[in-house]
Length: 263
Ligand code: ARG
Image 1 (cartoon, rainbow, N blue to C red):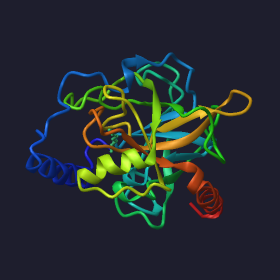
Image 2: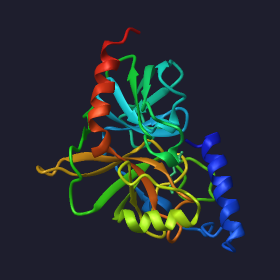
Image 3: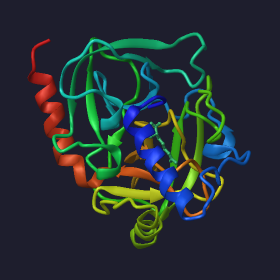
Image 4: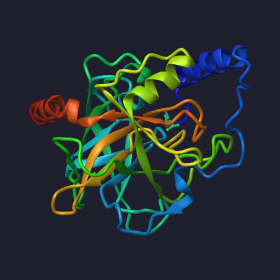
């Protein structure tokens, strides 16, 4: 989320920790393009959606969007979220829009650093677009694609009109745990996947968007959700993504519940 109070507080605490460690709090504020700087052509990621609170999401059923838990207020009725879909350029003609009806957020969610960072949103109408499947198991060769309309730099404070994407290598749990441990954050390895390179990462406003890999038939499958990171694209601090293989059964159950729930 672009302006998420929890994120700001977490970032503030982390910045303070880093500053007292002698590492400048703005070590990442060099002009690096985040998310690799590649603009997605129309139709490449047809299930990627933009949410009005400043997050991303993925269409996993014609009427269901999967996003990050920290992008929503909680579980219950919710008609406040506007969904823009079917366009890589948000201002392009042919955008499909829908409104949220109901949200189910992961039960254990506290804040994005502590895992459980997912939520599903039921829309008021089906969108006529391809849907994205959630991977049962970790897929592929350890390189995934991430995307979003968020900041292209840690210090840019501007959202993008066009969808950007980048390929990011997975960073082993042990390495990521150690890095973030030094910054005073305890990761939850079974619930989070770390990925990125210095200079290549997601950033503020990309939250909730999908991290995808290739399934057995070469189709895109979702393996993660953009969750958080210390700054963006900083050396030694990869992006942290919700590990969907862990949550697939819970998400399926939440979608079933959403379908039954009245308006
Ligand atoms: N929490 C951010 C958001 O709300 C996502 C940040 C991802 N950061 C990163 N360095 N990968 O948009």
